[in-house]
Image: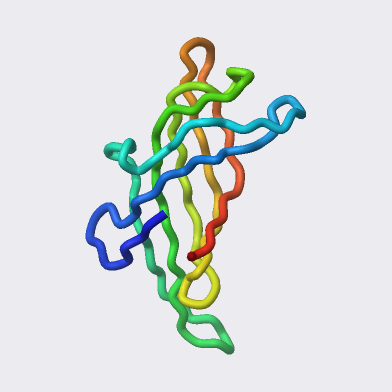
Length: 126
């Protein structure tokens, strides 16, 4: 994920791959890539909020919200189809070197009902 904190629009350029998780109790690797390049008209923003913490003084809390889209496929077919992932979180650590938060994923399979899942994401600066 590349982030330009000085950008006026679309400050986040990101892709997500190497997705892994459990499907019906079986560890599964999900192939495909989700990216901001595929996410037209989606949220892509950095936020900054100034707060005064008693005993510490003023601090700035910086967050991100970003949508990524693409096609996913897993061996069972359970999580296969067009997907939208939304990440929303906060930067932490010295100079915001890490970010964590919630992710939500909606998948539109070729047949059957849409699938909605999610969890926690984290990232560290290289």
